[in-house]
Image 1 (tube, one colour):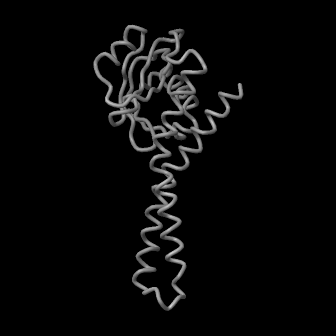
Image 2 (cartoon, one colour; image 1 turned 120 degrees about the horizontal axis):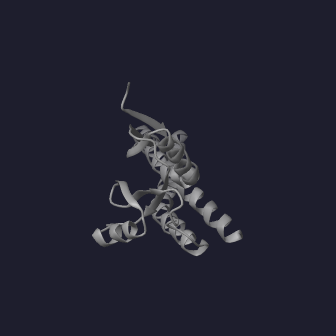
Image 3 (cartoon, one colour; image 1 turned 30 degrees about the vertical axis):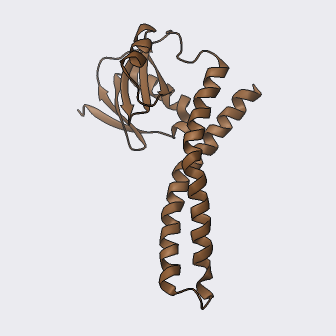
Length: 179
């Protein structure tokens, strides 16, 4: 019998709560979150537990940051990079975010982070694409239009992986503010 399994994530900007609920369901079956891997979670087999999972974003988290969660009953499970942290706690523990304002701030911070990358990526993609579209113009060398085509594709990928989360976080902020 395998001791680990992988489950996909829908993307934290879009399905954060659903992902945390799925992790809870798996924990009840004895599959506990071990770490996050590209586009999903690696679970390890253990004792069934009724755990709640929660996600927080904090750049350069220090011992004090983690001890605050620990004092509130939350255990650090894993981190992604130096900014995204997943915690678990027994069912019934007071949630990390208990009011709408702090939840809105959480998503606004992530929206800003994604926006700082997505906006330049959008502008670069549009610029490169428009240069690449000039291929029928005799004044633009073919090598330039070909290079712009490749570079616009690459910048489009950056735009996709930052622009979509930006839209997702914007929608979450909108929904929370609306009530």
